[in-house]
Structures are given as structure tokens and as C-alpha cells.
Length: 234
Image (cartoon, rainbow, N blue to C red; front, side):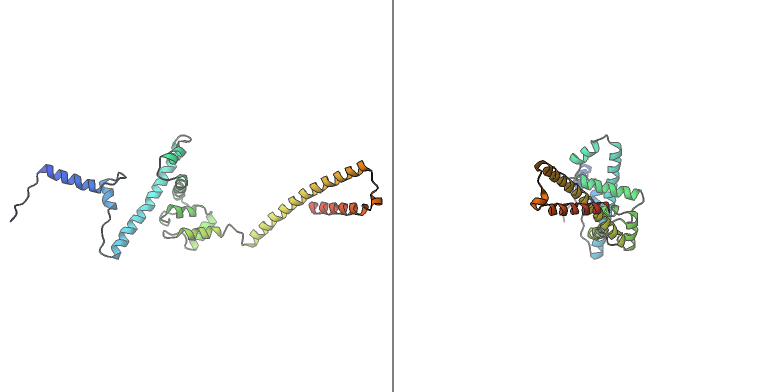
């Protein structure tokens, strides 16, 4: 029968240090954080759902906290220091920083409810692009929920980019009408310059237009100018 191994205090301390070192991760996580993020095989589907859902929920809390830190940094750091920090010292870029900060501010201001917020900051950011009326409509359609897909919100928002109502169609036609009016005015000015130059040439050469059979062409040109004048003043 083997004799029991007797461990002294120093040996026990070394074993504890090895266990903690095994839990440590390159990002400098604490022992508690290492335990929380340790991947452990589960007994059934319910166990995997529980662990995955826990980590997914923590992801939302983390990007909101990052957004709050970014808001504080933007307010407190000297001019240009905030941009330099994002550009060279953080593990994400300017676009991600802007989105997380915008979402965090929307939650803080009460525009978005924390509990209903999508788990991804990129998806949650789509909600910040909606006005109050569009937010209410999105909520009535069940689009403000934690498991909503970004594609759903993008499609919802794009529906407002193109006018589909009678009022929107009228606005579109009014813009086109004004554009055409500006084009008529431009053409009128060009035609007037052309006619002035033609008359100048006639004075210089002193030709009898009627004798040359060109008088009728001049009348056509003048009639065209009158029509342009009427269109421009309409």
C-alpha cells in the first residue's frame, strides 16, 4: 500500500500559483474573470443555452460600458487627444467607437431601453438613426428586441429613404419642377447671348437678310426666344 504524500506549505502555495497562472489570459484578466470565461463542457442543451446566453448578455453590458467610457473621454480629454487615442491606442477604429458611444448616449438619454437593446452594438446603432416617430413604428412592428437582426433594421430604415406616400411623391415632383425651371433659365440666358451675338454680326456685315432669304429663319429664332421667356416666367 502506498504511503500518503505529505505536502508542506511551500508546495501547496506553488500548486495554487500554477492553477492561477493556468487561468490567466494574455489580456490581463483576473482570476475571477478567467473563471467566468472558462469554457466547461455541459451535460445537456439547456446547459449550453444557459452559458451562451450569459456570455451574450455580458457582451451587451460591455459595449455599453465602453460607450460610456468613450463619452467621458470625449468630454474630458483635450482637443485632439480623444481622436489620437482612438486612432493609435484602442483595439478598434473610429467607426466602432462612434457607434458604441452613440448607443450608450441613447440609452442614457432614455431614447432606447437597455433591456430591449440588441446584443450587437452595430445592430443597436441602427436604432439610433431612427427619429422618434420611426422608433415608435419599429416598436409596434416588434423590431426593438434583443434578438433582432441588423438586416431587419436596415430594411426598415431604407423604406423611409424613398418617398412612397402622396406627400413624398409631391415633394419629389416639386424638386424636379424647380430643377427644370433652373435649367430653362440657364438655356434662356444662353439663347439671349446667342441672339445678341447674331445681331452684332448682322450690324457688322450689313447684309439684307430678306434679300438672302434669311429673314424667315430670324423670325423662327425670335419666336423660340419668346416661348422660352414664357416658360421661365411661369
